[in-house]
Image (tube, rainbow over all chains, first blue to last red; front, side):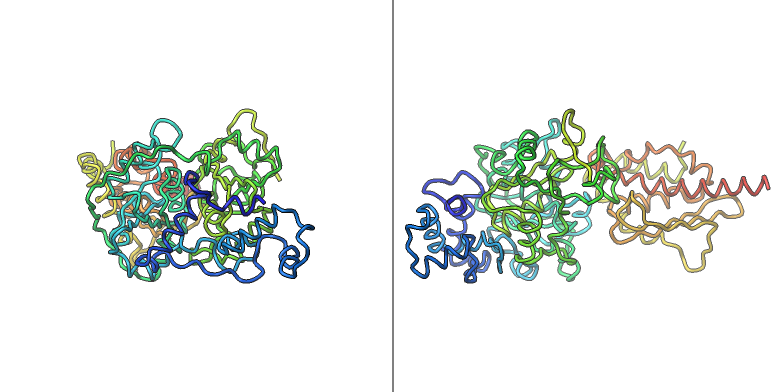
Length: 375
Length: 151
């Protein structure tokens, strides 16, 4: 069955970012000194398997297997061998699928000087880092550092390697991202790092807002780290975690899950810019036909932390109709708010095959021939 | 072309290398709170609102003295971005003592000379917001003056 097999890393398969994640997890779990850093994956509660409960019950009760298709039996067996996988695909999870993808403010304050981590601040407010930041944190500017200045695209693998080297990052460095706006831009930077295959990435739960609200230390001192020699990534994982216009169009025509994470006004076509933001040059208002509206902020609490797993599952699996194993595309205006939702779906709910359409509404809304819907 | 105080600030920024420009902008942002109304001050016009072009409430207070010179004070909500704070302090200081008409006639091209090309981007267009609000209150003031004269 696709659900189970999609997440089971096959031998030698370390290509797809989403697949490699489980490999990383197992390495981390065997790395005793880092246990506190990455956390233990909790055992799932009974009855949280993604397979229908009736099938599980039939197997447990010894119902003849011939009545159940072989592939499902094999998948279920795999799930029982690897409880973390069944946990990650649960429709009623009690824990995040990848709790190790988050760090809490309390933990970070105690580990500011740990070797092997790099704290990275990424904000919408371009001068916010300069006004004060977490001690030891470096700044990555979503536009100046991550976007190509000429082509509407991300930087080249060579530039990414230079960026990491400049900040003393190696492929083994655990990058902990945080920022303003409940980690919008932090998730965007994290997604961009995953685009280049950097595996060890985490988000500071609650981001800059929570850190500051808790009156934790801030500094204006800009740290300097010895330059590293980050190898140039062999490829960019566009195909795996990024969607382009044609793919979003196919998703729309195929009736597959598309989530529009903009504000309701933008979705309905009543406004062509974010509330409280200037117009950014979109000709038409509305949304991609078939897209469900679920503003990104629905996934966060008032203190900018992520909502618990069961609430997230209710929002995305029940209300948005996202199904494990099905391709899902998320979008907003330029791909930054949808990076937040991509992180929630991929890391907190453990869904495979989620891609971020970063062309988003600034492309779709202006594109000649692109259909739109207004409701 | 520009009021003398504003011109001095523009000239200062134009001589700064990028890192010092950022530092100076942050330093101005730190001083934005000092531009708030003082207890004893009474204003001719007050315009406090939260509108669609800015992330938080911005208040503009205009006092025109007996010599026709404008004195501007401003209040900013906590969510207002750093560059907007910087521009608030720069404009309150740079326009201090100008007449409302001089402020209204002020071209906005100096903003990029202060902020620098690297920091001007789509999501930082709100750097023009403060100037727009200051001009707006000056326009209302002048319109009312003209109306009063006609009456």
